[in-house]
Image (cartoon, rainbow, N blue to C red; front, side):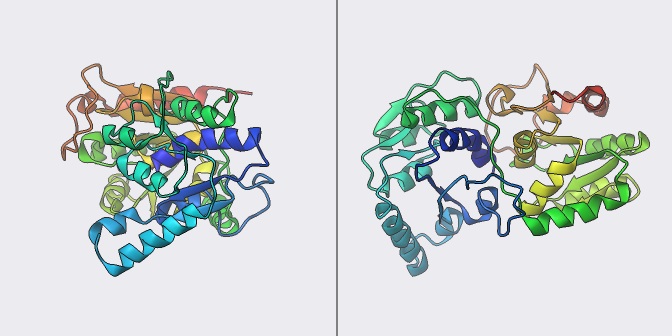
Length: 338
């Protein structure tokens, strides 16, 4: 989710610079809603961000790599990509799997970073771009500029507007129209990035005491975390297991998002919502909030480490609820940028 959201500003800039081009995207099925809505309200951009979406369920393929179903789907995807007649393929993920999928297009140009996230991907690229930007969004824009033929700049990304999800979010917040809503997302990709749930609960209670409506996002497998916050606030912090389209719609309407380095935080940034980011072993200068009002909390003791440990990283544990509340108060007191 985060990789797609980080790539969206680059692809949006490319679309705006060359509206006549055909731009397609290969994506895991579960993230399709970030690129196209099932139904439109007419409030989104006049032109779709991408012309076609190719689905690559690599997570399922890894479970049964040699099954007839997997082999059939891989062959079908390859056929669809080869028939696209693409002039260039951009690998904006920098992983060996994404580079391998790019190869399936049979395109002369497969462009990626000179120093991708996964080093093995480098050997599959036909063109390697030495990027200078610190943030992954800036790096992706540099890659897109290679195709555009001119220098692009990070652009507010286009995200889909789903009619049913928008109506759902309006209904959720109808009873608290005069309250600022704060969205807390306590999950993370692995334990070392996950701030303790009891501290999120303490933050939630303090925000409720200040008159805010607190909502808790329960992503896949995160219901126990959201439930703990709900119980820690005496049921006042409502938790929601949302679809991706619903999460987009709900995030559009909140006045504050509090999360670690996780997809919902990057979604809030893409939608221009104020963000408090709680960081530990990952580097916010590379993949922190971008293009919105934000505060990032990270201990000087934390060092970049993507080892998927189960326990919270030691530096992350030095961040206290009062630190988060202070950052949240500063954002809430600020006048929105005009």
